[in-house]
View 1 (cartoon, one colour):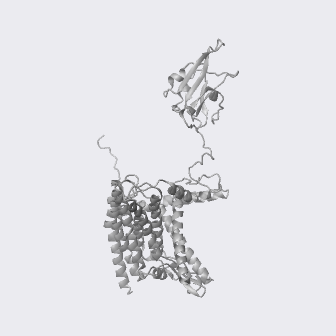
View 2 (spheres, each protein chain N blue to C red):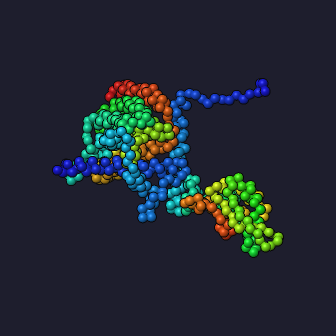
View 3 (cartoon, each protein chain N blue to C red):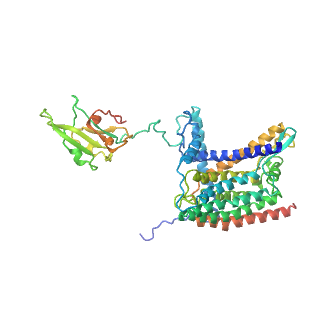
Length: 363
Length: 178
């Protein structure tokens, strides 16, 4: 019973964090883009006269989407029409289950593993689920019998399948380096320092090319600018053209959830996951590179690591939004060529180079 | 002219340009610079600092009034003589020159032999007006000016958009040039 409650608590914590961060991203997207473009951003909605930097707009958006007309085009099976947003939303959330959001939490004599699913093939699981994101998109475009939606779906198929291949191949280098597919093990590998204790042993320092390729492909997987060809709102509106109200909101939210999930995966594989620089659980505190030591209690270490995970995820989300509001959109032929002709050979080259180097140093 | 030409250096087309990476990094630097600059200034404003430096270019209208150029052509106003009667002599100059045909004057006789004529009614349909200022230029009596700075011109039907003589005679200039 206690184990069950702990598992439910962990699931609620992770799901709440994921949804909360995705909601905050809808606000951050407006405010950050406004600041980047010398504007002020949404600030008119208020609660009891408090504007709170525009945060109530998260609620007003939801209220607006919930009270809008839910339109189903004639001749479309209503249950299929309703299924597509659900598939998209569910598949967007699922990869987070394998992400370690902390190391261990000491709780009354026992330690709680801060990961929802401790899988040996955690990375393969996330990639497999991520590749399923195409089903909701294809279903949405195909079932609504609108040629623009179908065009959006076909673009999505071309883009997501092409980049999905690169997504997997780009992670071969890190997997070779870490020697595991278990995401928790990967973070444990990174939870130490090199260069006489100065540099955290994060994947980005050993696999910069893989990081670059993975981030590019990750942005493409979220279907947002500069890879928002399935949506293409200035030309075809995209696969969710025939959706309104909260069904459209589900697609919209799914994009943000995917952004958070991509950020989580990036943090886990390349940025040390929950590991805090110089904080060592074995030593029971901070081991600073200049030789001093700061003791931290075991609960404090767990809390610091859980906080570090969200801080890193938020920072990567910020960077993804920065890219989204800086770069213009690719054409579909450019995007597909980038994926197949440049990123795929680059990631294969990276995997090959990593393997050769690892052989040479005898690991 | 033969022999005179300017040799244009083509931008370099090498792998660094082709990879887009330097351009992308430069763009990210520009947008991130704007983000952090505005974030810093907005935060400073919240603590009452750096009030003289604007963050962003947005005027929070209607709480924050916009500055108006001295040449701004605002809403129309009819001027009065010292005795309070309108300066207008209903000569139809403005109604004739108006390219939008939005001015409509109904004249009447006045007993003063040096004035002879004055408007009984003077309408300007603001929903037609293009704010060109020709009426001000054409007026021989300096009776009409466009110095009421009020651009909140809106109505629930088109009749609310029509200015009558009373309103225009009783308007005060609020233009910075006055």
